[in-house]
Image (cartoon, rainbow, N blue to C red; front, side, top):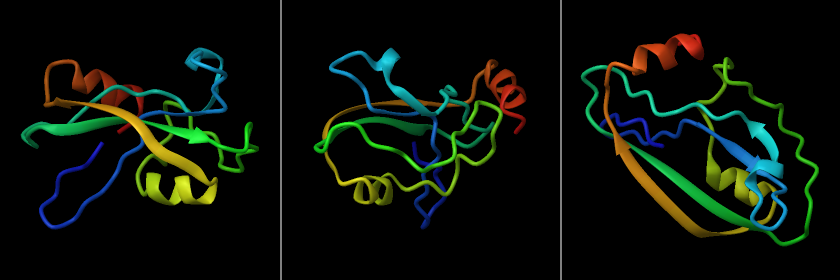
Length: 114
């Protein structure tokens, strides 16, 4: 997703899975555990984008450190740089949603220690 700040585009990594066999996402290699949308209060709507890339050379040995759902190292991610590093094709497909603060957000913030 983006983290909307005027004049400065940023990404925050909610989920990253690689080496997905066929259409079996649950059997893929989780690089970043999933954390749901959690926009801060009074920050407006945030966009959350899901992208699908193709691994042209088959399975990849990723050298990124794995990120658990309590890990704060989700910012400073660039899908463009990641795709270039591993020679990924795409995005081939995508979807998005918009979300804003609600009563469940503090629970997510506590879960990921924000």
